Image (cartoon, rainbow, N blue to C red; front, side, top):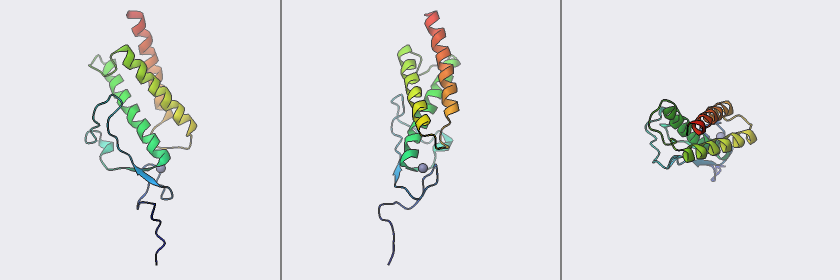
Amino acid sequence: MTSTESDLPAGKCDACGTTQKPLVKVSLGKDFFGRPYDRLSPSSDLSPKWYCESCSVHKNLQRDFRDIRAEFDKLSKGQASEIAGTDQLQRAQMRLQEIAAALDSHAAGSRLIDLTDVNALISRMQAQAGSQSVTG
Ligand SMILES: [Zn+2]
């Protein structure tokens, strides 16, 4: 006689460690820029991940945040970037605002993504957008 909870997969959330909630496997699929997500290159995304519901939301936010930050870093260095166009830059900024808002309403500390980092990137992008509109 066992008391196994059949609707809970064995294991725990890879972010917060809970074993008490249903877990979902996060499929990273396509990234924010529509590129196939290469889970082999970012060293922190090597292992398969299972997350509880709130952490799976954060995981997607984290992925988009990382992608946007990486592309913005390229742009800042004058390299080819997915957000070189004004439209893409605006779209990325809007997504960051969504991420910041989502993190704000989920204050219970997920360690996946830091609102401070998101806000810092928003500020950098606003400065960039400002200088672009002046020059052209
Ligand atoms: Zn969790």
